[in-house]
Length: 95
Image (cartoon, rainbow, N blue to C red; front, side, top):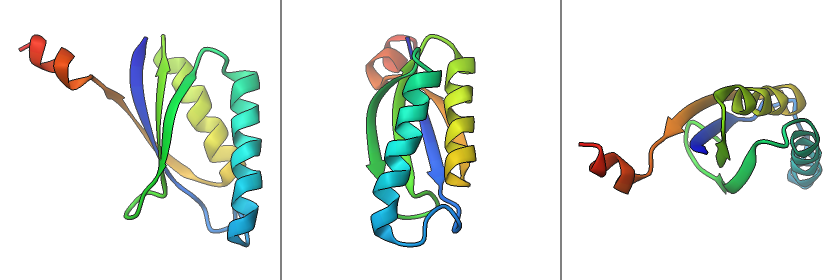
């Protein structure tokens, strides 16, 4: 399994109040679980800066992660940027 990072910038039309964000997050997560069973969510972080959310996921193929990112885009009216991530110890061993 490879590790990927999904950086998400939520669209202003995705929710009207912070309370609605919880419902949106649950809706997105449920759809990804149903449609992308090969993607394993490891962690999620709310961040300040260019992005609103960073998700850490694992999957056997980039196509599975791409599908999950497209669901995030569609449901949250968001933009995403996805990157493959190599664990630091593995990176150093490969040098």
